[in-house]
Each structure stands twice: as C-alpha cells, then as structure tokens.
Image (cartoon, rainbow, N blue to C red; front, side, top):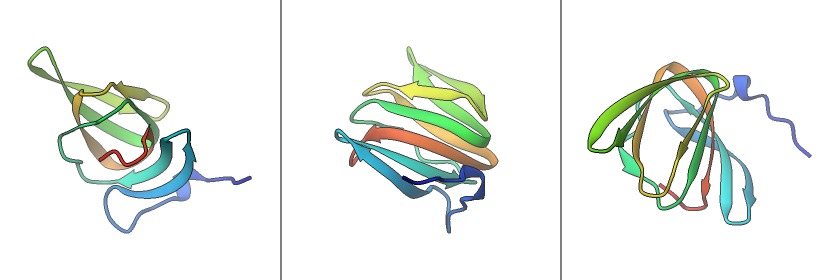
Length: 103
C-alpha cells in the first residue's frame, strides 16, 4: 500500500512524473507542471485528472482549436488520435492514466 499526497509533489522541471502504478498495460502517473506541454496525439486513450491547480486544455475538434478550463476535480478524456495540449495556469498537479509508453 502507498499513500501519495499529491499537493506535496513538486518535480524538478515541468512535466516531471511520479510513477504510481502499471495496470494491464496502462500507467498511472502524477505530473507536476508549471509550463505548457507540447501538442501531441496519443496512441491510445488518456484520462487527465486535475488534482491541484488549473489547466487550460487546448484541443482540436472538427478542425477548430478549443480550450477547456479545468480546475481541481475536473477530468479530461482524450481518445486515441485526439490532438491536445495542456497549459497549466501557475503550478498544477495532474493524474494521467494512459497506455504504457505513450508520449
């Protein structure tokens, strides 16, 4: 067993991750970030849960770029092939569950 206090985790650089578990080919990692991530497309499904802070999630849908403002407790789901880019507003802590080895 393990208890992780997400609010106490800080990475050495943006998007550092604390591995939590690997389950049936999926990984769960706690990320700390204070800078935008790059635009990317996952090779599988991704669940992105904001645990602390705020994130402006940029995503593309039907040829348009949209932005969803996520706060602690909000969850963003990106299916395989969905282009997206997370922009933390200040520091944020995010739980990401995705296929092992995904970018």
